[in-house]
Image (cartoon, rainbow, N blue to C red; front, side, top):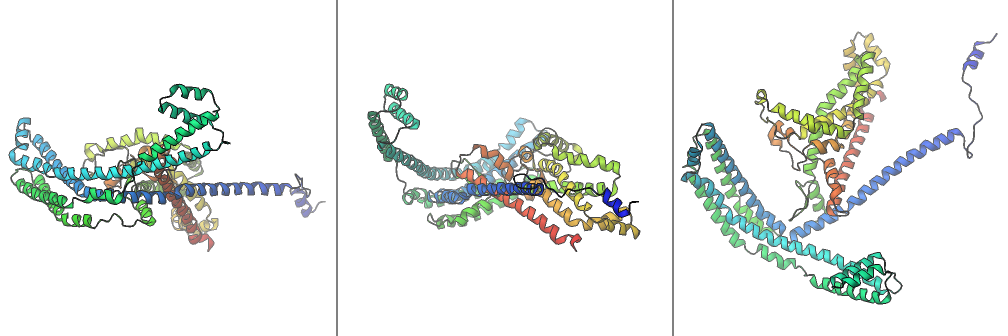
Length: 590
């Protein structure tokens, strides 16, 4: 009769002590090598991506520093100081025109005919205010335009010289090659020789050259002569730019500029005095006119500080590399292909990304975490088997499909909803733009819910079962156990899930590119909740939108890689923060 020990031995699986060998290694060693190699490949690929990212972005600081130096040396920085005064006046004039438009609309609402409206709006008193103020800044605009054209001409001449110098260097290299008798002229040389012959009015010879390659020694001599002639002509066309002399034409009329500002201040005061003669017969418009007067008083009071800033401006003030980096990290403008100066400021893109991510997390966190708690702790098996696959299926939907849904359906639905009469009490309704931060944020919330749900549920699953059983033994209900025992114990994992969900939404590209509106401007946070319905641009969106159009190695190209580096560090910090939270606050390790 077999003993219990013998029965257990007989029922246990039999593992052979012999190991099959392949190339001198057993199966365990092969499996270990396979997975170890895959892990190493992943590390190598990540290292290569990191190296490439930093290699392409590293040259940005030097190029941007050079661009800022040219911006200062050419006088464009001085002109931008002039433009501040002009732009402030333009904003004031726009504010006055808004008052005029509101006045006309009010007269229409009162039932006045078009003739009566014209008679009222174009009365002598109203003309003195509206037309008079519009004419006040004409001399200022002409002066700034004149100085701006001078500075741009200097900068463009300098840029042309740089391009010609590069072309001369290429010619010099080609001449050296052709002078070497052992050098075989290639197809590029033949094409260049043919082009030079056409430019020297020898089309028949050019056609013969293209059909009779390789070139003879006689052709080599002719080609060399044409190259040297072209090189000499290019060298003669370079007109050196003396920034010290050129800047004089931009800055030498400060006395005239001071006179323009003085006359402008007097004219503004005269126009403001005429505003009292205009009868708007509207308390709201009267209040806006008073505000307009206060703004003009402030505008006039800033003139001495503005003139002092121009006087203290120094063309030779040093620009450090840190200034270039600071101009990128704290810059408020992202302006490319400008005829004056390109600006690469991160703040509009960073604030847009953070605004959209905040909206996404506002919806994704309660839905994702709440669904995880319900499915894991409260729902029955039937509900669990129905809800969980459907939530996780969302992650399988392509982001471009979600983006199309946002453009065609969701964004338009929000805009139409905001136009309902029942919702006109909302200060920022109706919404003017269907593609905005709120539209993109809601769709990103949909994409982040599966990530947060899955990771949060895993964290809840990792809570030891005896915690739950002890709570039930003490008389707690299922809901009390979930909220007071299970969730606090798994809180570190839930926070980690939220942080990884944040990393998911801030790195998303297609949805924000299609649905965020792509307006490169820092959102107006003074607008209150209305800021959520403003069009914005994001860091990922700008890379996807502009990378295909930039010149390889250009300043714009490297600026996009700098944005990529910022995203890289953001993702790194988010993942590191998630791991730190798990390690530091996990109650399971106590």
